[in-house]
Image 1: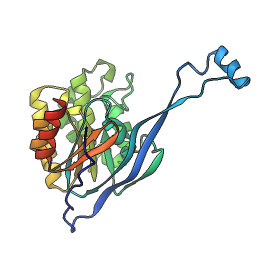
Image 2 (image 1 turned 30 degrees about the vertical axis):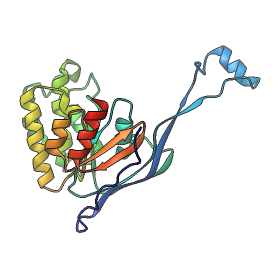
Image 3 (image 1 turned 90 degrees about the vertical axis):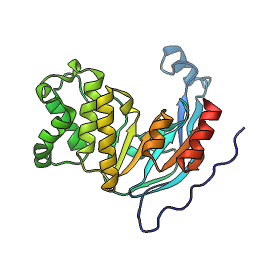
Image 4 (image 1 turned 180 degrees about the horizontal axis):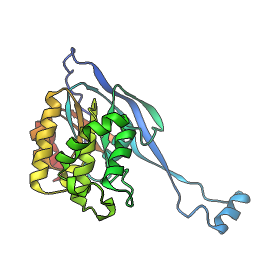
Length: 258
């Protein structure tokens, strides 16, 4: 149905590589039956237990990213987008291939990721910012700006279990962008929250891009990718199908996948 991946034109040589994937694949073991039930444990002891099947959400993915690029990652549900971002962020490890990253990564991969419900907003900011490489002094110096952007100063000492999904998205995004990342990973988080905050995030992304931050951005919204990105990667069934200018790739994607 689809032809082999079309390679993107070479990026400007003066910008250094910040991310390189070479033949990356990720496999999971899928059991047809629950492996730890007593019956299945006994079958394993006598050598009759069913073997798990391998499932590859990603296979043989290779591409380079240079400093300052804004890349839109597109594909239907189950195409491997979120798995790819988790591998780049270091939240999982590839089964095959190699990933090389240069600089500080700020991943914003899931709503509320790293937020413990019984902790306050302040505590979650401190823990997440520390995990992203900030020192205690840097966190204290940036806390006011983080809260100002997220518009959550009045809820700083409220447990995050009482936050709405929009509040969680605002706080997570604000922490990520104030770590001064070299590579920002954004997975559909901008789809949460009100329109005003989405526009605020998009404006901030433009500022980060102008400052030389590399951004890998997952979205199902073709219009958003057209507006923000200068390159698109199209994943299909775990493989990199297209890599190049957003316009032609998005046109084909919309025609093919609706």
